[in-house]
Length: 346
Image: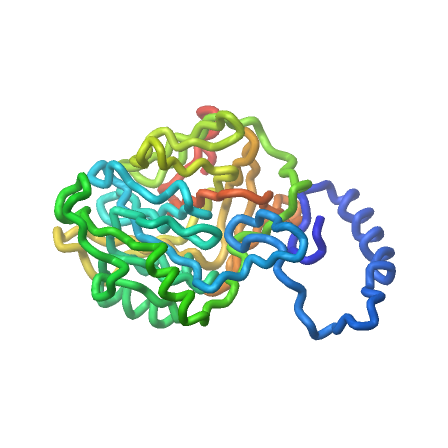
């Protein structure tokens, strides 16, 4: 385990105690001996902040552009979605009508285009703020704009050349908005004002394993009566069976995380008169972590919209997420549920 990262592997209380003694004993022997080293000089980042993937020695994950989140429709009208294969993280959130929308995050690589782009929700504050991501969106309600401003989240909309309408796409007019992600990144690089995002997850390293789980190679994750994800672990990756991604542009997850969140109703309705849910990715709640065909029950904690999320097991020991691409489902507490192997876990 790298000492530069927070959290510990899942382990028994006895192992934790033993590990604590080893870490304490090794403290003085690992202090730098180089006379030129300065305690105030920060170490170069050695892993990607949105995937935890280790970089070759001496390389930094910092780039000249910020992280971007593209809001992408997740209904049959969005078929085919594009640009997801290059994403680092995908977050799925509940919106009006019981359907879902994706907040697709990019940093390690930027696609030329991603979409179809739709509007933001107040939920996005808790997703974008921890990594200082700019949201690419077709727009939002006044309430949503106010909530994002409150938490210093910036967005890129159709008033810019980076979110545009492209009627050549195989979608209807409502779903014909495109995010020009690489173009936005190139423009940002010229200003060179970006800083490395914080870690989205409490990343472990290549030796990290999740223990104490149950076999679960097929898991259903329910958001509402209108949306249930059907996940299958195959070929070392988690594959979403009922997705709208293009066949050549599938997002294959190394880890799937499901977090139950407090869900409230926004003080406005959509143009059709439907209520608009807001999933609050703050506070604490139940979580399920799927990795390598196993599912582990956990508790997630996140202090405010800008806080980083952490996970603990039943004994209170911290859980690290192994490096790789993560798909995060934010399901509503009370209605959302997870079904591994046909057993409902509430």
